[in-house]
Amino acid sequence: MKIVFHQDYCRTYSSDPAATPGRMEAILEELKGLEFVEPTPATDDDVVLVHTQNHINCIKRMPQVYEIALLAVGGAIKASQIALTGEPAFALIRPPGHHASPDSCWGFCYFNNIAISIEKLRRNGVVKKAVIVDIDLHYGDGTANIFSSIPEVIYHHVAGGPRENFLTDLAAFLDSINECDVIAVSAGFDRHEQDWGGTLKTEDYQNAAEIIKEFSEKTCMGRRYAVLEGGYNHNVLGKNVRAFLEGFEW
Ligand SMILES: [Zn+2]
Image (cartoon, rainbow, N blue to C red):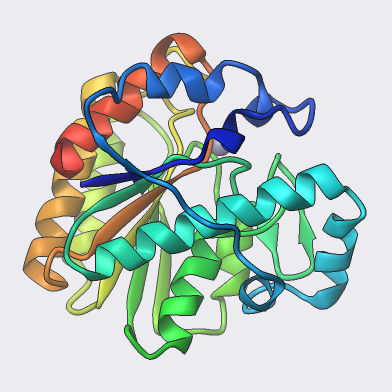
């Protein structure tokens, strides 16, 4: 497994919780010893695969944000390319992306990293059908909007509610999928019992990742990657990412 990361993700590009100083460092601390690779920034040609030129122009008016948002997209693209070789990958990136719709964004997101990476694979003809599973506390309205009229890409946000529902819902959803060429995970960690959602235990992330790993091995030759979305309690975020990656394939 490879971790896609760039030192520039440690930069503070805004005042929102995803951009807080120390957030990336808290995760890095737990991932020592893993193999890291560096992404290059995406281009407007990549971003326009899912966003309007008007939206791109809006983000360009915030030069610092625009620069780091392109690098985040580049991280997701790199992870998707690694996954296509059969090796799992995790994009340790920010800003997050799942609240970025074609022509708007909110919730600390600017460009939809995971959606662009999937769409790039599809346009290049290397995959036809894709599944995106979102385990973040929040519904990825941006991702859902982008793929609402594209039946080849199935977006699923794992149900909220009590802790017991989480793994059951994830497994039931994946059981309903007969074929896909790659699975991507919007990996947010804000459902944790010590984060905003107050629900999941750290071990649940490992179990979720194992379910996804088994699905990918059965269905799409193990092609799987995950992209960081939310997760805001620096005291537990690193441990939760680590647990997820242990299940995804340490
Ligand atoms: Zn969230």
